[in-house]
Image (cartoon, rainbow, N blue to C red; front, top):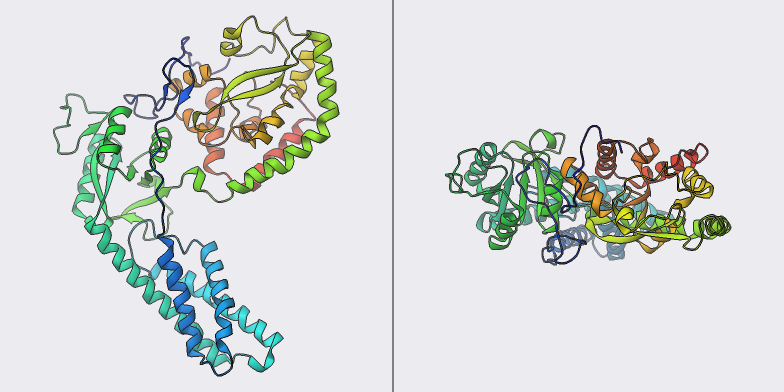
Length: 482
């Protein structure tokens, strides 16, 4: 195994370390009497209707604009198509999601104006084409458009003002994650500016040497996940502000249902207005909230189902070869770690019979094992032994593209010695991935694989999945095996 001179402990441990704060306990603990991995309890799901006032403001503004046209020539019939287009365009642009931080409405005016203009122009063109007698004149059209824009801006301004008053009166409990000194200064800054609706209740990070358990300050310094767990529950923590990189803790807080924020140089390039008293700020969107993940699953099903059908003759030939060369037991079943630490049974063609379950779970590579038959060598070299995993993809255990799944034993060890290894479980594991198309498979660097996997997750797109699948298909022409 190549891990760039990193020694791997020989006894299993809990699944991940917590990133840059080595004093923090693991994010998950084994269940009692079991080696299976358990995530911390997820925070309660809260129903949100925050978009309803914005939707209502859009519809009311359209109705007011149509009223300007008068009812003389059945102008009210325009309300439905214009409102439908406005709601569709604004929704696609994210204009119905409340601002991440309380602020004004001026930043949204250009987007609102452009989409309102498109809605009115499309509707007016359709009316002119199909009912010329009711065509809108340019002056009436401009008057209706201006009325809608002014009305929606005023209504959204009132909603924003109401929200600012609400967050000031009812601030959200927040934990600040970072070095103790910087975190204290930033927490003090937030306390001086209640208009952001954020109330720091604790600091997460390594305690300075010689500091008292409470850090000698009003805010406690939390150094273990047990302390974080208690703080989240007792203070009803809703936000976590990060002053640096720590993907493991980001995943933990998102699992608790907290909004996570990155503050500082890492948040540079965000839109004006997303700042905390001049500090650049951006929200870290949980993977489950990203657009397109439903399309990712649809792509998996659309490709894996026909692929299984087309590959059935090849699967039968491979199964027959394994049966003849190695005897009964064609399929090899092994427990692997999937998304969010969930365990599942991965399927492969058996290329080697291990001595016992311990060897199966803890031996890193069998690529050069002398016990492997010629059929096993061929299946591994051509990656045909991985074909049964198409069934895992169809079942939803895996995706076609994602970080490769590993055994619980090695996940525990790699998470201890490689920063960010645990964070690669934010995404469904995959049959192939960005690391694999760059040649990182088999006995290659774990640190490099971890870096590629997290880069893939942070910059995921459906088109990137398609590109990786095409590169994987091209790579089958020059197989290297695993």
